[in-house]
Length: 162
Ligand code: GDP
Ligand code: MG
Image (cartoon, rainbow, N blue to C red; front, side):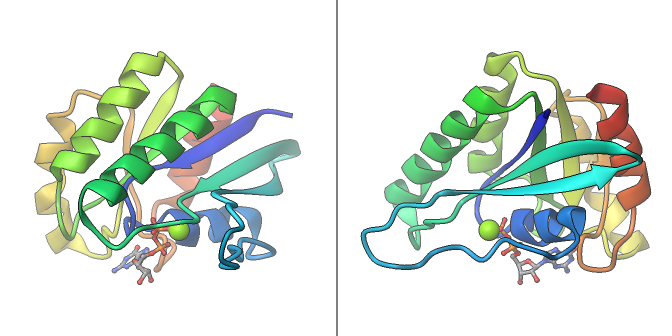
């Protein structure tokens, strides 16, 4: 079964999107101290094809170097097993240095990817897309996981790449 990993810095909406893609059946992350479960797996059937989605970011340090290290470590681990990467960023905050570092990891992996710009809830948020286009990663799809916009386009792009 093909594996599609959701990768990106904390708070961009990976888990929200993951839950939407798998139909909100899973994705409760263990918070038990000492139990490292930084990847959550969920299966979905999209247009008759079974796909495993991988959510990353179970353990998210509050800030600083640790957050950066953890984000990059988890991205790397998920990249290893992914057949396709959803690199998730978000339009409200815009592009951050950590987004660029994660993007560099994904690019270096050579894995097929889709750049998912989340939190495009309304027209105003479209204005922020140019900095993401400037990353030069294609295809780019604007979505709102929360308001369920752009999900059909995303699903079509996923199917085309599996
Ligand atoms: P993760 O850390 O990348 O897994 O991000 P989460 O899925 O936990 O989401 C982080 C925050 O962003 C939560 O408060 C979500 O409700 C919010 N969020 C997720 N998707 C959207 C969206 O499309 N629009 C807006 N405005 N907020 C969103
Ligand atoms: Mg999460």
